[in-house]
Image 1 (spheres, each protein chain N blue to C red):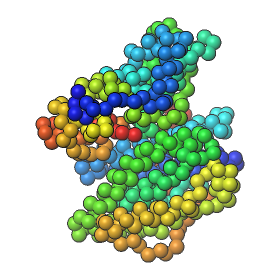
Image 2 (cartoon, chains in turn red, purple):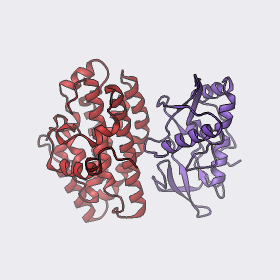
Image 3 (cartoon, chains in turn red, cyan):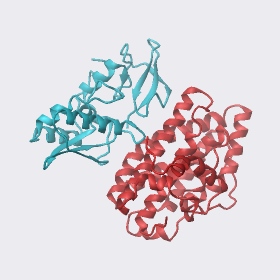
Image 4 (cartoon, each protein chain N blue to C red):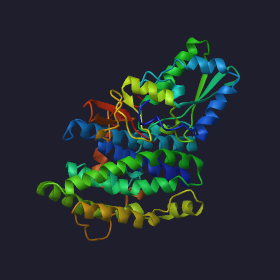
Length: 252
Length: 173
C-alpha cells in the first residue's frame, strides 16, 4: 500500500506509533506482576489503540473509497509501517516495558501539546483528546521509574539495563525528514527536533531522582519512518493480523 | 452537601452552556427528551445527555442526525452508546439515524453537572471536585489513590482512609 499525499502519510505515521505501542502493551494482559498493574497496562494499551483508531479513521477519510481504519491496521505489511523502532521492540521484562513507556510518555506529552496547535483542525482535535491522557500516562510511568530505579538492587539493575538498551532508539523520536520538513513549513506537523530539550529535562530529572544513570550517547538507530524495521515487527504483525489475513473482512 | 462542594458556586463551562442552549432552543425537543432514557452503559444512572456525550440533534430530511463526542479515547463504550441511541430512536419511530462523531471541543469532566455528580456518587462512583475526592460511602475527603487505573478506562481506584471502603473515581480529564 503506497501512500502519496503528505498529510495522509503523516497521519498514518502517528497512527502506526500508537497502534504498535498499544499492541506491545496489550501483550501484558494476564501476565502483569499484580492485578492493579495488569489493569493499568491494559488501560494504557486501550488508550494507545484508541488513539491509533482516530488517526487511521482520519487517514481513511482523507483517502476515501473503500479504505477504513482496519485497512491500515490489518492489510499492510512490515515495510508499509512507519512507526518508531522504539515502539516495536519486544516487551522484555517489566522494567523494560516501563522504561520504554517512560521514555515515550516524556516525548508524547510535549508532542501532543504541540500538535494541539496544528494548522490541521482534525489533527489538533485528536491531539486535544490525547494530551489529556498523556498527562496521567507520564505521571504513572515516572512513578514506576522512581520505584524501580530507587527500589531493590535487582529492580535498579534491571531498570538500568533496560535504559542502556533503549537509549539508542530515542534519537529517532526527534528525527526530521523531507515529509516532516514540508508539513512543518505549513504548520501541520510538529517540529519534533524542537521537543528534544524538554524531553531531556524530564528524563534527566526523573532518572536522577530514581538514582539511575543516563546512558552515554552512542548515535541513534533509525529507519522506522522509512519502513525499515527490526525483525520483531514482523512477528508482532503476524500475531496481530492473523485473523484478518486468514478470514479477510471477518467481523465480531 | 459534602465539604468538597459546600463552598463553591458551580460555573458552567462555555461549551456546556452552548450545548444546553442548543437543547433549549432546539426544534426537536421531543427527540432530546426521548434520548434522556439512554444511559451510559458503564454508569447506568446518568444519561448520555448528562454525561455530555450527546452534543446535538437535528433533522436532515427524514433522518435524525446525532452528534456524539467520545469521553476517554480508550473507552470502548462509545459504540454501545451509539447502538443504544439508535435502538431508542427506532423504538420511538425514527428509523433513519445518522451519527456524527465530533472530537472538538474535547470532552472534559468539568462538564458534569452537580446533579450528574450526585447520581454518580449515589451509584458508588466519585468524581473529582476542587476540594478533593470525597468517599461516596461516608463523604470523607480523607482518601488515597490505590491505582491510577480502575475497572474501566474512565475510572481510577481509590480507598477511603476514614471508612476503609475502596471506590471508583471518574478520572479528571
